[in-house]
Image (cartoon, rainbow, N blue to C red; front, side, top):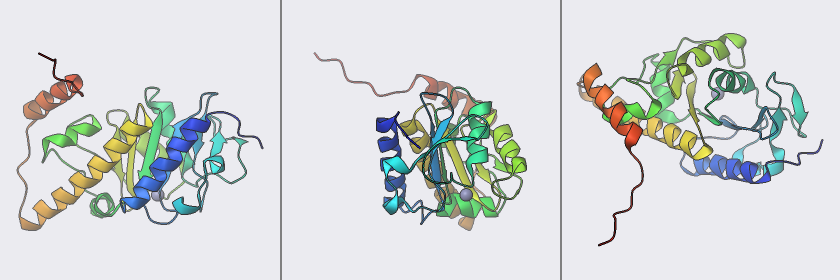
Length: 221
Ligand SMILES: [Zn+2]
């Protein structure tokens, strides 16, 4: 089936998958990534294909209901929660999923990432929740992820891994990489004792600051 559209976006998605591999956040064919298609629905990585073998033309175009519109391969078996995120959050345009070591370790403890560090607000709230355990690829897991994404841009899935979303692919990658790093720091802190948590007012301050925070050049003169 012809792919046609979104060639640049698919090339960016391929580069993102390779970056996750290079960062050691993705192994083999465990992680997956999707982005909204300009013609509706979304592009997702194919099932069972490691990043080093993946090409920009190997992405699969799925309709909003999960039907395959284009692509030579079967989509990632985890496509249902990608679909669920896009349905729940019209503002999000990319979803990154990985079984990265630290987020997955915390997910296996079935513990959320609490407000132990102000950067936790990168996911849009006071914590990164952990969904209950459900089998991968199931509607039950999709519903749990969609519920978490009603208020956040990332969640852990119990005994599984991390999902992060963004209004752009770059933002989804930023959230995914940051949450993974925070999970690592949290686990290190937990190994020594119970980390002090920021309270709701302190996190509200951070979230407000993040709303206005961005790259800014110094004005000349
Ligand atoms: Zn997975």
